[in-house]
Length: 231
Image (tube, rainbow, N blue to C red; front, side, top):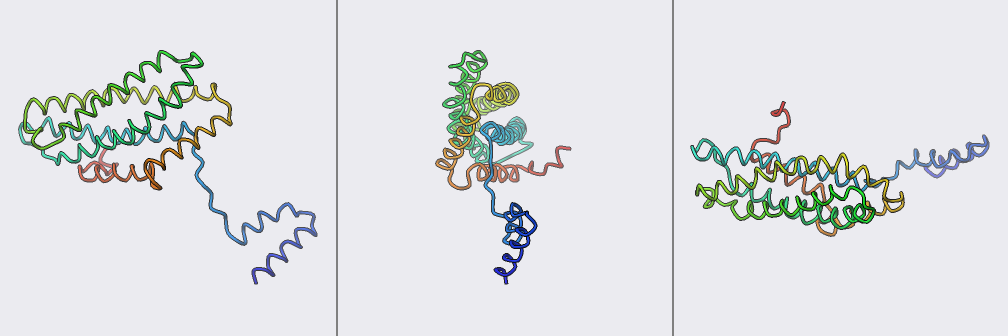
């Protein structure tokens, strides 16, 4: 039946001089072919900034509860903070920032463009890693019971959030848009393929989407997943 129908449609298209329409007709008969997602390198980096922003919201909620814990007004499982810092370490610092440091920053430095901005961004990456190390070390129930360590982790969270909001905003609005002027379209597309390959090498088939799910579970545990609550 399918063979007969396809033959009829093909002959009809040929007789009317519209043989070029056959791929469209064949697709309608057999169904659309699955298409792979085509993500540009800067779009990839920017949506990873979206993941970072969600962790920053988690950090702010944890900070609110740490500050309130002095009066024992709020309590939370320190593991949620530790898991959040782990996502920052593995996905943001060891993967996302390494892409910037290995593929993006050197192109600007070689072209002598936005070098002052790149220098600051590199320093902030290093400062952020120091904050993450403190947060990971002090995200325990024992540490949060001590005023000194509680103050230290609160300071690290506050600094990290305050630094990374303008950090990522400057990359999204200044650095990434300028990349187009430094590379050819072929090189730009190749960067996207390199990023995708690296992502799946480190995080498996789930990649970025798997990390988003992890953050969502933390948000649910803290009661901040429902977007309507922020209205």
